[in-house]
Length: 286
Image 1 (cartoon, helix red, strand yellow):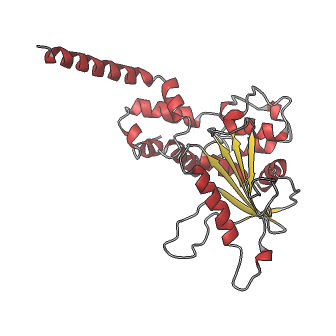
Image 2 (tube, rainbow, N blue to C red; image 1 turned 180 degrees about the vertical axis):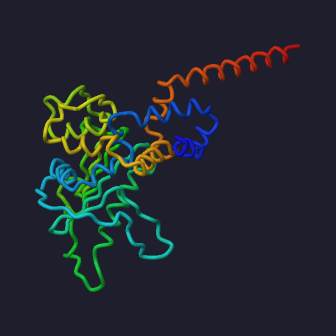
Image 3 (cartoon, one colour; image 1 turned 90 degrees about the horizontal axis):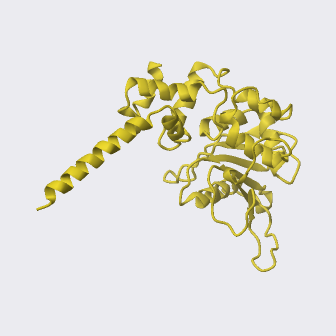
């Protein structure tokens, strides 16, 4: 418990909680049967299973993928002052196609630019001196997002490629970006969902499963097993917890914070503040 409290103390928004409040928050995260797969660390942890990753790619992409191999998720810089590019999951197929799989929790203004930069970086990194441009292999960026963007249509997956504006003629298909906006799925169970919808449901809802998710069936059983909290070694639980409470992720901590009654303290604090403001206004009156 003290190790987890020490992690909370690293984050300003949790530092001033009482020890009891910190313990309640820790329990609310670690005593769930399954990890929250919207969490960056948990998402990568589950996709470390090669078969799970291959199933995901085959469910979303048009071409069959027989094998995948993992690549280092940090791209080598061309120049010392180049921006770092660190991806969640980077892998390639036997024929050299590259796949970037991301989980994005927070909505950021430059989000689309970042996905384009990731994909372009993987194109740029492929060729060695004197290699022909014909050696370039397609790059796919698949990003799952826990927020929605403004679009002209309402759909689950938005697929982008470079094409001619008037005719829609595809340029060459070397770079494709898939934006998968998780909140767009409106479903209360996996029953009747197609594979893409099922992935949306699992990634968004896994944290809410109270017991054995029998409805997932044998097809998704490996995901449930990889996401089980009790199967994590202690050092990995620490990594998961640290990722859950950082300012960058924040995830569902606000919800857990209120569920455990911490909002009482916040309400009292706001009441005192209102009282002071009211008292101050009275003093200002002539």
